[in-house]
Length: 331
Image 1 (cartoon, rainbow, N blue to C red):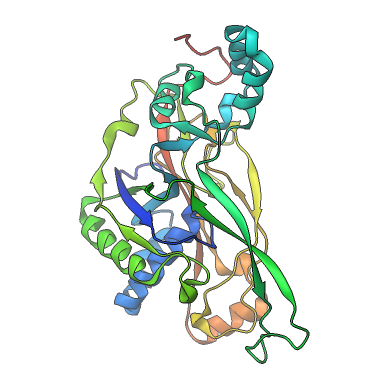
Image 2: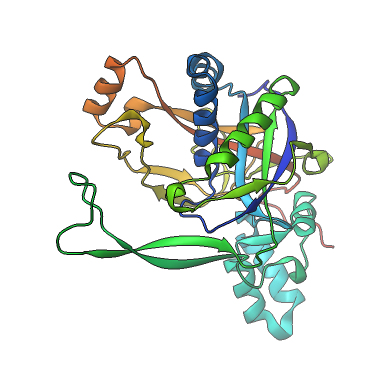
């Protein structure tokens, strides 16, 4: 994906209810594709799917982060950085090292400090998760009858919300000026329907608080030598391999719009936001073709309807000066 130049923007959202589906980049991208399909189904293939399969998507997005927070880059758990915090905070070193290793969030200023080869102070590490998770009890619905099962079976599903009801979510976006207006309309369309599972019962409601605002601050790094990825994504075969990352297994599903009995995707290995690589990129990842993550009969069914779908697993990256393998500058 070298040679693709896209400006960096951000868009602010305010959740109006808990959400059942994590705000991950691949899901956000997919729902924006659905928003475009509702505007003009004929345009989606040429405008989004075809360029994405060629490694040139018209836009890429980050996961959604609580306002004021960024994902803690995995490089923070590098032994050289752990040793710095151990020595600097000797009286509380055990608690400090545990916090550095376990935290998932840095303040915006702490993230920018790390981008510029400095040690974020402990005040920039989250002392608690700004996103609260909780379980909700649900009735099991039979796929054949579309009603609760005769045994009245219950199950617990996860939901999430921000700890402060007044807080916001931020999504970072790379796109060209030519697609910026269209992408803003797609976010507006998505906000009218809600995000993720159970929108029909009020989950995933959110309001847009802004349009796509230029946000060059995260690209303003002098002489970068690395990239930090802000998305849940899957690396492409041409992406760099040296760095620090954490993987997850994702069990996805197709949307209900295709009328399929089997809506389950094969398990996919994806990387969490905060991955760090020794190459300066603005975009990583790839669009996964449907034959790689859907059952053969589902692929055949969709193909007979002349429908092509992708799993958009792109990563939005920002530059960093980290000197992987060397000791960073002391503050």
